[in-house]
Image (tube, rainbow, N blue to C red; front, side, top):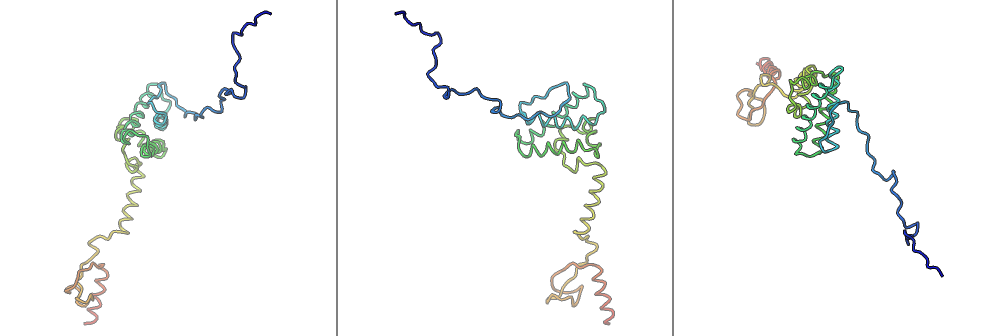
Length: 207
C-alpha cells in the first residue's frame, strides 16, 4: 500500500468560526477631515490640536492680504505659529481650556471684518506675536468699539458712583436727627447737595 505524502501546508485545526476576521474599515477610528489650508509650507507641531489651532489663526490672518503670494503666505504662517506657540507656553504647555479659549479669542478677533485694525497690525508687525497672544478682548477691539465701551463705562460710573462734590458731610445729633444740621455731635453722613439746600430753605422759612 503506497504511503500517503504529508501536505506541505497542513490544514488548521481551528474551525472557520474561530478564525478572527480581517478588521473591517468600519473598525478604524474616524478621523475628521482637516480644515482648508492654502500655504506652501506645512504645519507640524507634533500635536493635531496645535496644528489645527495654527491653521485657524493663519486662515483668519491671510484674509487681510488680497491675492497673497507664496512669500506672504509663509510670513503669515510664521506669525500664526508664533502666536500659537506663545499661547501654548502661557497655558503651561498644555492644550487645556485656557489654551482653547485663547485660540478662539484670537481667531474671532483676527477674522472680524469690522476690526481690520487688529489683523493689519499683527500682519504688518505693529503688534508682535508675543503681545497678540496675551491681549485682552478690550485691547483687541477696534477704535470705534473702544470709544463706545468708554462711553458705556462712563454712564455706568455716573449711575453707580456718586462724585464727592455732589455730596456734603452732615453731623447728626446724638439721637440721629438732623436737628442742628452742620453742628451735631453724632455720626457724619453724606447727603446730596440738593437735599441740604432744601433743609436750609426750610430753616429760613421757620425763622
